Length: 428
Ligand code: HAM
Image 1 (tube, rainbow, N blue to C red):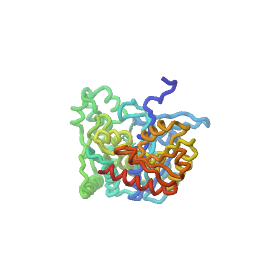
Image 2: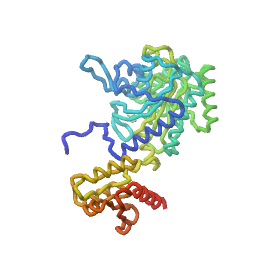
Image 3: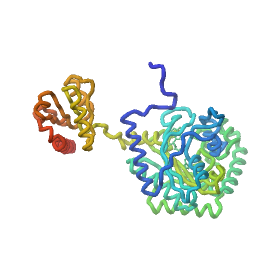
């Protein structure tokens, strides 16, 4: 066992998985760029205060932050999410509104690691700042939905709720608090602690001991103002117009404090219920102002890459891309020919690998096999002298009789022909 291993909850993403991650981000970028979102790349680390604005009653802020004092005596933290950074960036740069951005990258939360829950995890997400229109909520929700469709996932459920205007939410929280206090004896000890910090989060409890009391709790829908009810009705109408199925879940309060009006979550139905949220988001007001900017409406979501890939595995979709190269060059004359041939082929647009250290012919052919190349190009002293090269198909029936010795000058066209045959054979 080597002295060092990755820290708990942190992983190396190795090939071919890393190519799958890149593909995931690129499919996401394709979906949101075609809706007018531009990429923002905020730093991985910010002043702790930026993230404290997420809410001091949330686990993310109170228990899970990777914070430390840097050499300049600044109290900084690794980002636990990117919404707060996007709002800080908006307050700092004041771009024209609506500001539509997307992001991709790692976040850090000191959580208890388990399948689907890590201390370093990746998200892709979008945020829109400066527009308060229910049809924007629909656009945002539909882009997440479209992305899951592009991945090929079918067992995703969209949960939808509204937390109303800030005043509705405040009246609701007060009513909840009274209700839970009146019934405190029926709450689990964990939920009694949550109640002290944030009565809303008690609704989030997945503990069986809380199920009875939570199901009888007051419902947010009874507290909506006229404006909040109209906003929520328009969101639902819009989703119906786009044929996006959803389930209203009045207990969906989400883990961060900043939400107002629409909240939503995409649930992976194949995953364990404790980690089945593939992504989530909602509308938030007040975050930009709390970071020193003007009063600004915001809405967005973040989708967890790690968990979504687990769901893809469960459904057998969005496999890692095939890492094979087109051509593998085998050179038994010392390696210089392979150097020139690979450069020439790569310039012509082929993906090409080769062997090093002047290994035996047999060992180089084994490496060619492992590379998954469709074609091997072989050059030995005879070919070098004759100005030729051998083209050998590597897939399907590997048979020396199928290999051809061709003039070196025809290499590119011969490789092209052999690859076309390989593709045809593979799809036959
Ligand atoms: P969140 O619900 O905290 O929201 O995270 C969004 C998604 O990130 C989760 O649904 C989950 O898939 C993934 N995730 C979170 N924590 C972990 C973890 N420890 N390990 C693996 N995956 C994880 C936010 O982060 C908000 N910023 C979303 C948002 C954007 N709201 C408005 N705009």
